[in-house]
Length: 220
Image (cartoon, rainbow, N blue to C red):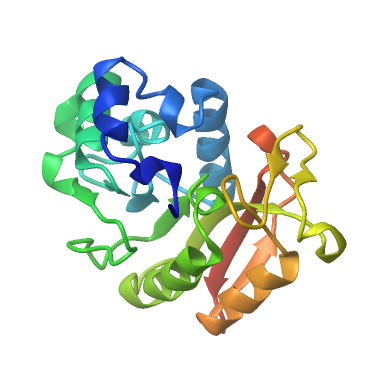
């Protein structure tokens, strides 16, 4: 199975048990604040249009929706039910986020996402998917979002000498080359971004669980 989130009934059971925060990685408050800080450091203002890829139960969304102008947040995820549940229970004013702007998307096709998206983020998404998911997502981001200023995404890294084996990250998480949570090589990030017409810079931020943040922009 490409991702543990694809197990039959996974989302339904988690929502029914009130575990919608846990299944998106836990550390809800810490991670949401880190996401907002990274976006603001990139230059996000309330006038930006944000696409939150793999937004889950709105861990970032419950902070970004009140910050952004109404209607300027869009979210995609493999589970529409999880997104809608997050909208209902995590937003003080759900009307700031139209239901139509939460879009079920399992293959990074971004159906219905408007051209005016100026910032996009995928946090803790690629860490649970094979490298083929990044290969699909990066060209789609570059091609489908013509006004994009920056795309922020996180991965776990491992040096080439340790890539084939389990690798302990700085935060203690053990990652793997062939199952979640997954790591990739730094050179793979550069190669895949270049193939999509993007240039990625590694950010120095220390992130929850030892993830590494990259900021990608279109090549000149």
